Image (cartoon, rainbow, N blue to C red):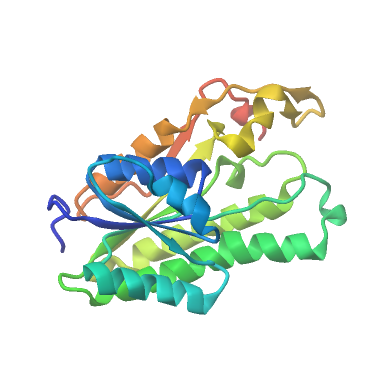
Length: 253
């Protein structure tokens, strides 16, 4: 198995152009990782890379819903650094929070293509690299969600895709075992990023009311991912939840 205490640890963060992807990329860089950040918009990725961490942040434009684009992404990483030690499978989208019978077919297809298909294709390519590199091995961390087991109202598409990520995580743990490849999942509740600002203003509750909820600084997610990534491959955190202590998650079911 690779020695992840070495100086040049190679990682990839998908959806790295903003939000939690940006926060995690910079946290990994601060911990000394070389971080490739991937996403559709090179300008946003370049902004993420404007960070003076210990490790370099290298932007590469890629679309996780396009097989050739993902294959080219992994091929470029291997061509530059020869291996991949960590994939943070983070790219994701959401759809409007409306009853399932009102969600458009376009929105349904898009959320499945990004949240599930994209994660599957990136995990597949990471497995191919990690199983064949010398020494073999590596870690995949999937970005799940607390919604996978305690959904918010009118979030069936998002909940379904994140529930599927849990199955992906468990399967990689099993199937990667013989090759030194392991997998973990981080389930996040109410981390403060641009796209979750509405939570502080008020969001729908299970009882039909609308209420503001507490949030946590996004850097806490970055710190958690860095810890998961820093473990030797002989150790793993299969599932880790990071959430605001006062959020009403356990009142949802």
